Length: 185
Image (tube, rainbow, N blue to C red; front, side, top):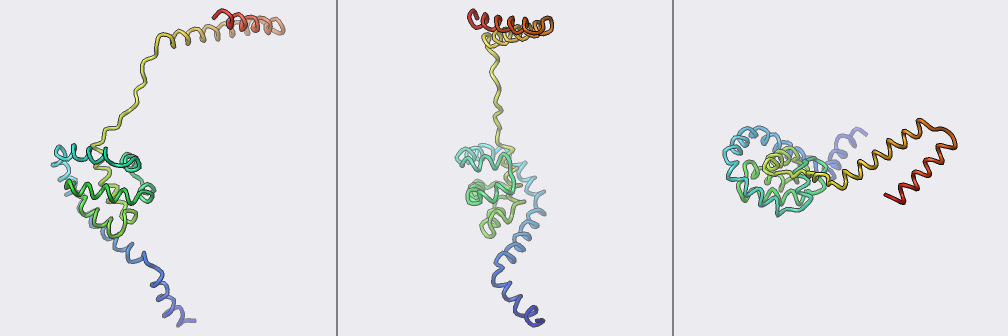
């Protein structure tokens, strides 16, 4: 049994465990990227004005999944849209976006799902260029405010009736009031 555990089992694991060395290399790539984040951030700040129109153009040409992922970068979205994420990063490399080249290389070697930190960092930088449009509600129309006033008046009147009247008389008056309001309003 000792020979089996020491000699045979490790070789079987090595044959079937394809992601082991890949994960270690991806972790090393993430670590080297983390060390260069300060330099990438400085370069990003220097080129910000030049990059903005290019990034917006790439962003508008991208798919809805990528747009959603850029606005809210999460690892789950990265795993679901790994092909689209890699294509977007390749487009960033073409415009010489700071930090995109090492991320693209790591993404092509290991897949975006194994290097989530650098990919999310780049997408957070891209998201600074994207203007999120907040939906502004239009001002209420005069007719709507008039309807609201009438419904409030009805509500106040019904509350008045409930407080002053009781039993069967109250029910008859409420029914009459309802019929009256349906016919004449």
